[in-house]
Length: 298
Image (cartoon, rainbow, N blue to C red):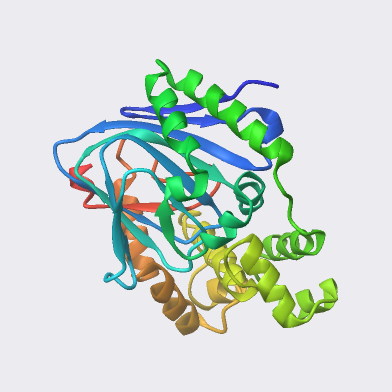
């Protein structure tokens, strides 16, 4: 199997790509060893990525950006698809790595537990089971990031070799949603699968952890964020709303606030402030995933 490769390095952070055969399931690896003078806060927006973060040192507090009463602290954590953004906070000292998986990859690696992650965070041990401690210890004792990424390649290759795959109809429906940026109506998915609406929803929840309508909303938001982040030539107002499948600009703004917890303008301002930071703003190449809050502390 071809080895994983190093993508980007920055102070305290290393990004890597998995070995070629794994790339339809694993989007990337991110290693970090941070020793900052002040705490850091990041806004993580809803995206079609399942994340498993393994901590060697430090803890992370996760807070729902829309419903702040929903909060929990973790060492190692698994996060499924969520419809609302998360504020991730830590003391400034954090050492570990994160794996970004496609929803299909998460299901193939972890089976039905991947569906159980939808809309929430969980201790990574609840997903990986007893092998988590041994894996985390081995990774922590490995002397370099390339060697750690190669170890992860072997670990996930073994899981994918025998893990379950999505139902073909779920795979077809998800592909339609992704290609349309979430704009295929649910009735069209029902017709295409030949299932009832109820069965389609149940199967989506089992495989992805969210219903088709929620999955479509996440993909529409991601398309909106990608266009917003495109620079000065990005569409705006009613044009942006129409391109992204919203009724009008007001509908886009309400949906954005309901999912991200702030206005599109405030989100872009946070990203612009963080642009001068040495580490990448986004966790996954090719996706808008994050904004750095309190950037002066980063």
